[in-house]
Length: 391
Image (cartoon, rainbow, N blue to C red):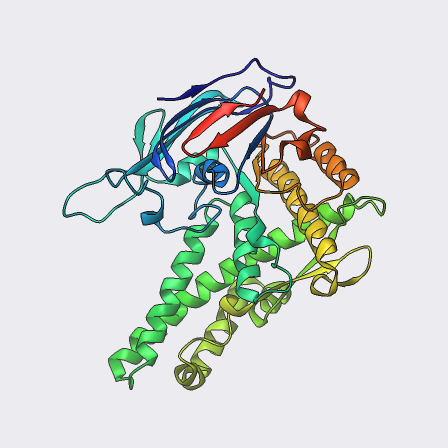
C-alpha cells in the first residue's frame, strides 16, 4: 500500500484529517495518505484522480458526495466490486476513525456500511458529531442561472451541513409525495380517499418541517453574510430569500396552522395535481433567490466572473455558519477553485480561507496557481492511482 508523508508545515496543530486510506475507490486500488497540515493542495493532470481524492472525503457527510454519484460508481472498475474509505480525524475530543464502504456480497444488493473507531455504526448520522463537510465544485458554476431544482439541492446541502437530520426529513417528504402521486393516478375509491387523507397529513407535516428548516438556515446565513459584508471584498455578500407558497405560510403562520392550511391546499388540488402527474404546490417547487448584494441585482444577471465570486462568498459564509451552529470547523473541499481567478483575487481567497479555522483541501492542475500558499501547505501530486509529495 502506498504511503505518503511529509514534514509538518506551519499550522499542523489544526484539527482535520490526519490519515486517509482508500481501497478500490474510483481510480485508487489502495492508498494510505498521511496528512499534516491545515492546507492541503492536490495537483495533477486532468483525469489523474484529484477530484476522486476529495470525493472520498465528501462521503463522510450524509448524501451521495460532491458528484452526487450512485453507489455503483464508487468501486474501482477492475476491483472486486466493493470499496472502502477510512479517515483518521483529529477533533475536539481527540482522534477518531471514521469509515464507510461497500462489501461485495453474492446475491445481495450493495449497501453502504459505516464504522466509528472500527466498530459498526447504524448510519452516517453518527459521523456528524465529529465532522462537517462543505464543498465547491465546477459543476456548481451555473447554479444561479440554472433550474430551480439545482438551487433546492444546493440549499438542502446548506441545511444539512448545520442540521444533520434534514436529509432524512427531505427523503421522507419525497417518499410521501410519491405515494400521493401514485394514488392520484387512478380513480379513488372510498378506502383510497381515506388513505389519501392520511398521506396528505404526512406530506403536510413533513413539508412544513422541510420548509421551516430551509427558512431558518437562509435567515441565519443571510444575517451572517450581511453582518460581515465588506464592499471592498473580492467575494461579495449574497442576499438570500425563499420563494414559494409553503415558505410564505411558514413565515406568516404558526407551524400547526401552516400544516392545516397546506393540508387543505393538497386536498383542494387533487384534480389539478392528478392531471399534472405531480404536486404543483409545496417545498418541492420552491426556489432559492440570490441577489448580488453590492450591485443589488439578481445573481443570474451578474457576469460569469461575478457569479463565481458570489458563489465562493456564499460557500465561505456557509463554512462560518457551520462553525457557529455546530461548534465544528468544517472540512472544506474546493475543486479547481483557483484557475479562474486573477492573482489578486486568488491571494485574497487564500487569506480568507485561513481565517475559517477548518482544514481546507484545494485541487488544481497547475501548481503555480498555489504559489502564494505553497510554503505553508502540504503539496501533493496526483498521477493515476498514486499520490506523492510535491517537492
